[in-house]
Length: 253
Image 1 (cartoon, rainbow, N blue to C red):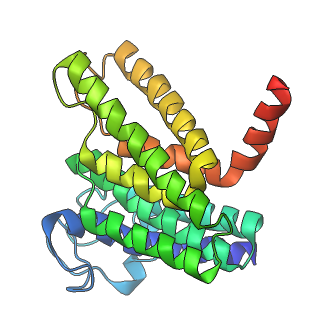
Image 2 (image 1 turned 120 degrees about the vertical axis):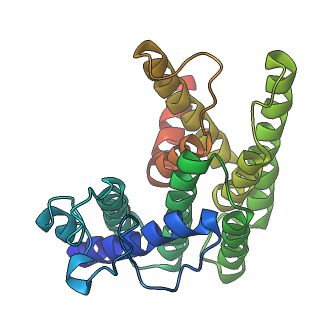
């Protein structure tokens, strides 16, 4: 069953690659069929098998021999791994299904934010609908009070952080897309896990920011997308949040 979960995740990842490429451009995610962005040749079914086709083709288009971005198999590996992990942690449950929808949305949002520095409202709206549906159906066991508090804690903190950053640095430090994304994730996580996710996100962002500054890949004043770090913090919280919270309580008591 674990292998089936991973395979299913890789197949979903192949579709998410289409979403990542087409949503920012306003193209339909359903048609036309996938084609090479360089030569526009339609991709054969045998060349569209997640991960495997990339390896067989050695990362090049069969028609024009131009390189295929490494991102395609990366996204498929991410979704394969996270789908298998969700199965291991949550099993085949409604809660697991809600987690998968959130993870898939965050995957698309992450790569779109990296490429275009935007977080499409339609994806956040879809996430909010899923979050409310999970609460109505009982797929999310945290309850309405905790979920709504999570919206205000996560989204509110990012909004205030943006205001503070703008006052300090005299320019926008946090986009409203990040604020809305935070509110969406807070709906899933509740207020306690929202705090945990925020802590993890800023920790990862600090480490990555310091690393790219030291290596010279980023100059002071350059903008970096924050959505991927929020997504990473939420991913850590989904799988390890309860354990980390118990560990923290044990340390301080």
